[in-house]
Image (cartoon, rainbow, N blue to C red; front, side, top):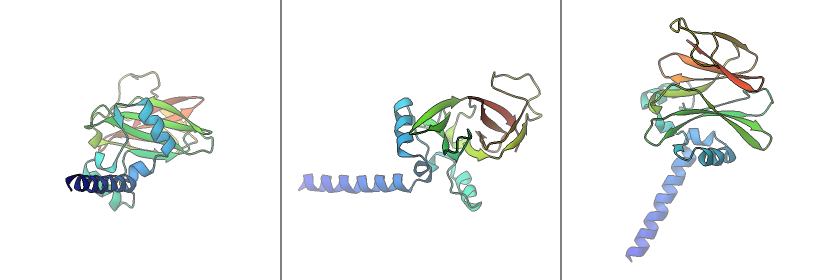
Length: 186
């Protein structure tokens, strides 16, 4: 009898876990083939979930008519008319955050590990940004610190915007086969 109870309990737990995954807005925004590739290439990191962020930020996002997912952005970031994805991956527990840009290449994905400076997943975000001109924020008055950093850039495509919530953001643009970025204040 005990074996049957354990089996039934396991089925219920599996159903609830499956239902929770199916309900998570962040996970539902990542195509299955990309999720599998991310798990293979970054085995120590987990895919983003709505629950990764402080619930104050999630509630605010939802109050603005958005879905509450601060860990996935979708758009055509490279101009090839295919849907691309930007995701925040983190080591389970929330630290060591990576910003990964996944550009669709036919039936595969080209992954780019972009420079990123938000270290606690609860405070990080990624979103699709506007096209246009981005100027380096005045608080960054020193020299450029990374070879891909720019003082200004103008884009004709949507950008990836990521950073720390309630702080400056970083706009990432893909052009001529490489990524550039600008620290800005939105």
